[in-house]
Length: 253
Image (cartoon, rainbow, N blue to C red; front, side, top):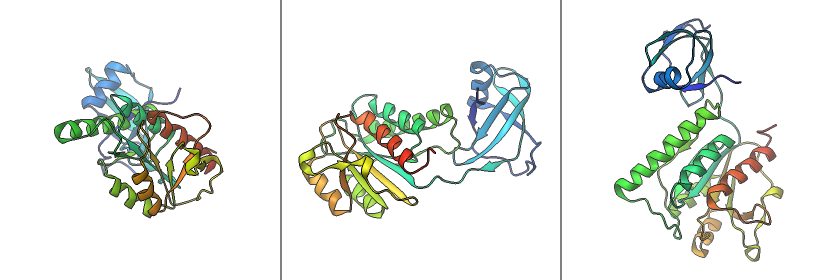
């Protein structure tokens, strides 16, 4: 079994470049390591800041219920993956938003942009919106740990349709998942994809992307694509599309 991942805010500058320095893992992460994972002396862990920097560690001491002393290897940094994949996710109902974030993170998406589409039943306003965004970010962090990632996806502030269009205009490949064949949706599996740069994919709400939004996104340079013969829910379409893109761009090779 691979070593469990724990998150640190940053790595101290005094750690030896070649490794061998000690680090005390405490607080919530230390409590989880000791009381939930029940780690013991000699077991392996991975520490990461969630932004690409990471180090292997070995438990050399356990104190109380919330503190481990680790001997760390050298602090390394994984470069950002390319092409970068951003999914613009329309706001689903209930906890389906967290499900979408969780599975997209486990699959390997690089960034998630919550989108308040016109046909979204759920709308993020005021404190409710801030709490929902915090849940999405916490879900991305926990899913990143669970899937042993060292670079977690960024979860942006909720975007309007105009802001999404601006994001699409800057992309090297921009796509809107749209199941209506009469609209002219091409198969995403046959699209010509860039080997570097930025891919932005828009996933609409359960009611679909409206004609005005499609026109706005098309003007920004995005084209409509479908995944296959079946129609996926908004909470699963982004994960399926991300998996397809990761395979086709060679990131899963």
